[in-house]
Structures are given as C-alpha cells and as structure tokens.
Image 1 (cartoon, rainbow, N blue to C red):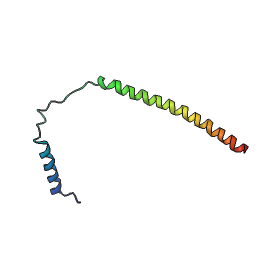
Image 2: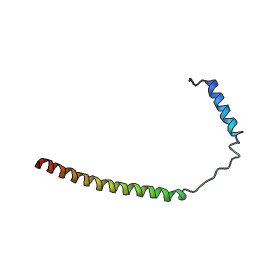
Image 3: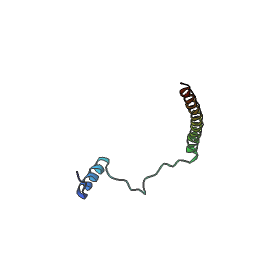
Image 4: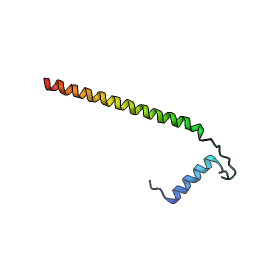
Length: 77
C-alpha cells in the first residue's frame, strides 16, 4: 500500500475525529514539575549502574580464574 497525500490527509482526518477538536495551545496549562523530584530516581539509577559495573568486574575475574583452571586441567589430561 502506497502512502499518498490523499491517503495521509484521510488518516489525519480520521484520527482527529476520534479525539475531537484540538485545543488552542495557548489556553492549555501544562503541569510543571521541579527537577529535584527526578533527581532521586536519577541518582538511584546511576548508583545501580555503578553496582552493576562492580559486579561485572567481579564476575569477569571469576571467569578468568575458571578459564585458567580449565586450561590447566586440559593440559594435564
């Protein structure tokens, strides 16, 4: 199906009919939130990323030890 100008206009009219008339942008009041409300959640996410990085490095060291042990056992066979 090819998207033509006429089809696009038809789709837009159908979608506008679903939601009714558009409100004037200048009359709509937006809800404002302070940045400090989001700071805690952002800080928690950053801390979680740091914790994951520490866990990743610990697991990588463990994998390296496992691989070395596997190599030693394979050589002894």
